[in-house]
Image (tube, rainbow, N blue to C red; front, side):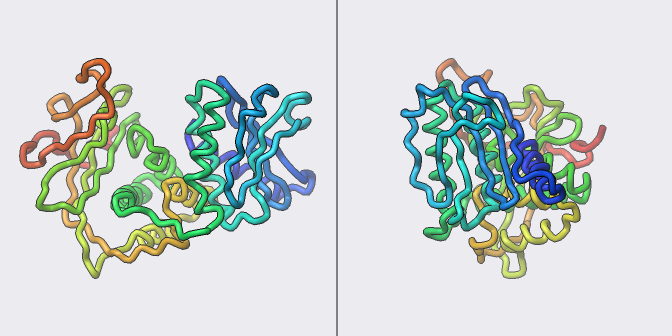
Length: 330
């Protein structure tokens, strides 16, 4: 399930609670998975909750993580299904950054989709809670790492351009980088695009994380957008780039989804103030066609996986060089 769909359900719940005097609380079905069913809930005091359907015999297997800002309980929820037990993950009154809860829910659901048992679901819940612990409690300042800062900077550079080209709602819906998806952008016409950002001008290579990144199977074309950025006192910080995009958004839905995706990526834009300023020194676009050098699943022997590698830009010559018009043409 895509995070866009999860965020939109949260928005529907928020809007119904805000605009209707009929409801004190609302629960909406989210997704039916092989080993659980997931629901989202909200009420007039904005106490958001996630409900997971759990077999009674598995309740004792769950060890609640020690995460400030979240409460865990098992209860019957008659509004959903009488006689069933649900694990309820709720925002507690001590939650400092409640805007991050939607990002947490998207990360959690995408992580449990392939779980093979409820015991594995419990393990995943603990892992995701630990990843978001600093967001919820602010026990220490959450900071994005240098590599993720550069990676997000490139993804936001492209998003800024995409908003002006497609409009804010469609552009933000195309961005899948925060979900650790196979490709960073899924574009109109079933086309895919991978963002690569580097500060290494002397080391002229394109880093590829694994054999899936340049796999164009089930797409109508895959491109690499390469940004070479450099430190520049006249450039932009990650925060200033984020707020420039945010200020350009006019629709409430777009603002909500954009902020939630940035939280999901791991950037606390309100408290993690980045001071490095960057400007773009070079932009290149490559189409990953049959002649483009790459490693994919089909080219690897059985049992080999998670293969990272580098592609020499000097060795490419004119191979794969493309224009943005090629990406967006119908």
